[in-house]
Amino acid sequence: MSAALRLAEDSRVAFAPADPNPQSFESFVADASIKLRRALVARYGVQLGVEAAAEAVAWAWANRERLVGMTNPVGYLYRVGQTSVRSQTRWQRAPLLPAEVHDVDAPLPDPDLRDALLRLTPDQRAAVMLVHAHGYRYAEAADLLDIPISTLKNHLHRGATRLRKLLGGAR
Amino acid sequence: MNPDLERRIRRYGTTVDAAAEAESARLTATAALPGVGGPRVVGSLDNVVPIARRRPRWSAIAIGVAAAAVLIAGLAAFVGRGRLSTDVADRPVDPTAAPVIEPSPATSPPLDSTPAVVPTAAAAPVTAAAPTTAAAPVNGPTAPDATDAGPQAPAASPRCPSYTAHNDYHLETCDSGVAVRLVQERLKVLVDSTLTVDGYFGPGTESAVRTFQLDRGLTVDGQVGPATWRLLVPDAPGTDLDGSGVVDPSEVVS
Image: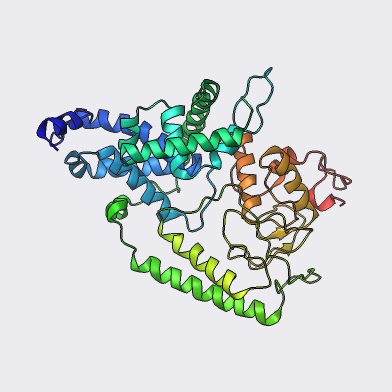
């Protein structure tokens, strides 16, 4: 990859690598913790996801020198979160996501969006929720999940197709 | 993606954020309590390896082999005795039916984690060694509902070696009975329509209970105690004998 492209990539990172300036690291962690929480909750559910995100942030503070040298620190932290979940759960627990909130006077859409999302694979669900529920750009979401953009698009496409199928004719 | 669905999902994003925020606050509050441990030692998360370079760890392989051995031994016992389970009496035995495992509402096949070794090892012995039973993968995401003709006992799962009849607080995993059945009926309507109502409290039921508790702001522990029972089954058939104000699990008539 040419140096110019690499520079452009690096500029997406909230702090320049090899610059352990405390202020910029703090803002990086603040930004990353929201992203991590959203990604890990999308994948593992509220309970496990929030806990894993907290662990990842704690790890970030303990290992900031390592993070500073990486091209994709937030993606690495996402994997730290995943490792944390896996090291805890002996038995695969189904992820817990909250029920969909409806307008009081509008008719209930059936089936529930939450049920449909739980029927996606974890990768598809994470992709769909990051891009469509939380509004991240493809590049941001791909970095966060530490996957190439093409893979992300794959997950998005399959996830959206499956959602359309599961939610049927309902709006 | 069509705009209506997009809008719906975006709105759901706000709901999820709110739930996560609440959970985060709860986590901080409990961590601040004296006696509760702080963040776990995080040094152990150092060996994070990107997926492309991941190699199976020896411990994971050992667990997989041990689990496969246990399953094969269990299956040999099953084939030898021709019974689906051992402990509970009066269990209707139907060796030609597929072993019914409580389907978890959202068990996804583990894609990239090392426990994938266990389900694939489990699937192979089941399909190979039990030709008279339908080839239902033990921990598969699509446990067949069609073969569940009636209240058959689920085969012993790793989680529940046997089910104990239990009709009182707290109802938890590995219990069975009319109270469990009532709980499942309500959960099927309120939380998860794919839940099997068979009176046997397995992982799927526990998961649905947890979802219900999360939705209603109860303590999420996967067990049906008085608070959960009150919200889930406020109008159980039976008589309130102990004056608790509600028909308790022990007072339910089937």
